[in-house]
Image (cartoon, rainbow, N blue to C red; front, side, top):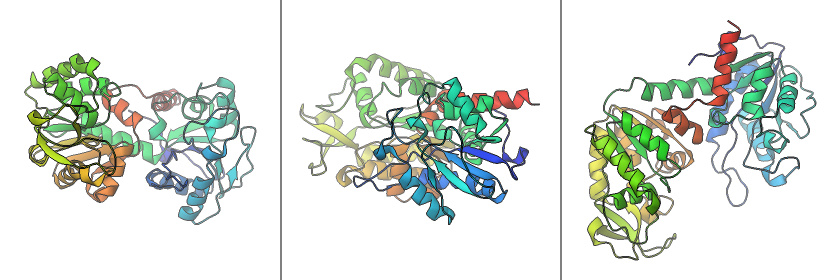
Length: 395
């Protein structure tokens, strides 16, 4: 994948519009609970500012209704955090589509782009207005690269110059290293509630990986496919056939899917649930599987220890509750201690990495969720595709 980068352009004195991914999680009292994505966006912003550019930052937050201002989706808390991290005032511009007043060396944050009519529809008129704001458009939002929106795709069609930001460049490099020419064995860890949301990636990974570790509700559906009783655990019974297809595909290649033979379960789901360790063949109809047991995690740890490359998306259990966090803790530590190249992505994965203190021991942590999975699946990401086409056109 080839596209222009900041190294290829001169920014001095130019109006630079940076599409960042500042879609961060918030706590119940509306405080930023994890600023990983904000921190990851800083290199592009700092570089543009240092070059003497007039810098505008554009991002979405959540899924607001287009056409009206909604305070709960405002980027005001983001502007405050950016001001602190950049050590300079970052004004928030509410009405910006028709023009922005920003001087060279200064930086402003544009209010939530998804509040604009036509953003998610990749509206041509809106895209052209965004392009008129700048001399250079920089897409540094890998987490939104799978969306063909005005702020990620349309603006890149019409901007005078466009390029990929350093975060996008690094994300593509790391993911390509993990899949295009991985050191073997290649191990994928995919957790989550539903097979349906990750079925295509599971089928695709089953063609490529040497071992596939599945967790959460996905693992429960796979257990059903193996004829196991999972009690009242979360699963998708209508996707047993698809789970079997994934199992058959990887086992036909000599790979393994280490499904749990011991689990930690409870009678109810909640932070005060009483944990009980059981063999998978001992479950009652009212048991809920909420974590993998220590014996299973020992087997998985052995696989990860000998991995050459590890791709990780999703926990194996309900790690938010401490009594059901041992499986994901062991998973995190095993990946951190492995000599293989490791890449982790997705919101829950980043939360686990942070909770178990292994951030600096993972080779690369992706800021993306959906884009991370779609890249692994081999899909064309619209926002990257247009950057590549523009680079080819200007050669």
